[in-house]
Length: 73
Image (tube, rainbow, N blue to C red):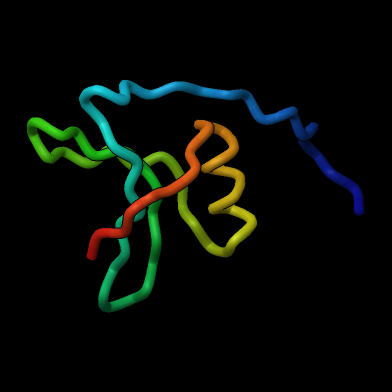
C-alpha cells in the first residue's frame, strides 16, 4: 500500500506520575474510547488519542511506558 506520510518510530513520552494517572474514558452511549490522563487533584481529563482497537491501546501504552490502565465511564 502506498503511504503519503512517513511513519515514525514511536517516541517514549512522559507524564507526571505524581499528579496524573492514565485512564481510558468510555462513552456508555456510543462505546467510544479515548485514552488520556486524569489530574489527581482537579479531576480534569486530558485526551491524547482515540482507541479503536487493541493495536491503538498497545501503541498508547508503549508510547508512555504504561503497564496497566483504568477505565472510566
